[in-house]
Image 1: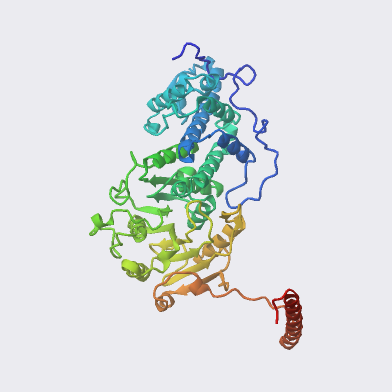
Image 2 (image 1 turned 90 degrees about the horizontal axis):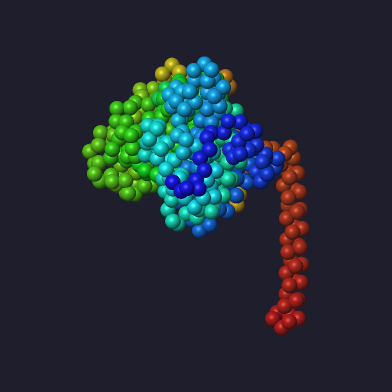
Length: 550
């Protein structure tokens, strides 16, 4: 360690700390009093996220967003656990007369607070933010935190000392993140860190384009999936969990509806090692105890939850994945409804989800629109077999431009193992189709988002059709939703596109009698024809004057 490295202890109070780690949320430059933008289905904005992102992004210099993401998110995570630790540390200081030891790791672990060694605490790192060895200090801090907290082993980024990372900008980033109190009790209850973390994930997904979007599902889509499935109790499984957004939203749903977080169990798997680490961090900052396996792994070729039967499967698998190694799984037990083509993993994912469903389980997932109608390479036959097994509960066509990674139109599939299990009304032999393509608002030039009202309409329609208590009565709405029988789907060759079934939206009558309307429109058309003739003569005369007309 360099001789000029300062080593303060944890902040004992806001007044006597020379390196305050949690400036007020309305600190200069964070613009918390700026008017909130119109929100979609992602929850109310905190107000300062755009300013924080803008400031952080300016420090990126020439670094790719994919690389810079881990620099920023690693520091945000470090700030969070240090804030939570510091709050507990102050409490233990006050309780020393009762025998409490603020430097005893067990005091923190007993309350699910990560133990942070002295050289990993934010006050220490911020005090040394301007030192040339700050990158190494952060790497050392990450190593020490992992060694003291087994659930974080192999998860945290540890590449801050690399020469390519500008240490002056790194120090500025530390000072910037220090402005936000993330881990104290009040802000934990508001989920400040989680919302900042998710905002940054979405911004990095946008900046990275296709590569980043592979693991980030827009929150409005996640919220719609979760609200549709309503996972109050049981096991939730996402075998392609990305950064863990499905789990976070599921916990929020339970909490928002008065349930207990412990009523659900989280299981996941992710094949990308970097994204698996992001998911572990994302769950850790929320205090979610999820089983994501001991390491990253491919769900098709190394199923880490082989015996799991989940009450809810919720997922956004990679669209139209052509490199999933299907040729090595030709006789797999999961392909009950047909062997999926080696060139497209869509129906491999569908059957993987079904395989992991409990006897009365529900699944909701995102797929490319082609999955609803494709007949190539046996996909149509697999879809037919799934329909004939009466598994398809609901299909939702979504608007375009929702995803950061692709403009491919997408849809939501909802499958039910048992449509008559006592929880809902008997829906055997029926499927609900919802066409939501006209919904959503543009949040920028190229991205669309579903509003809370959009989500509420779709969810309310589905729950009413299922017969959920307090959901109201269901009725077909031309152009939006229609309940269809299995015979109707057979008549359409097992195509599951909602537009095939919901019809056209009804036209609102304006009260004008037909004869009067036709007379008025005919007179208007005559006048327009006459005006067109006059303009034609004017143009021809102008052309003659310059020698081009006849």
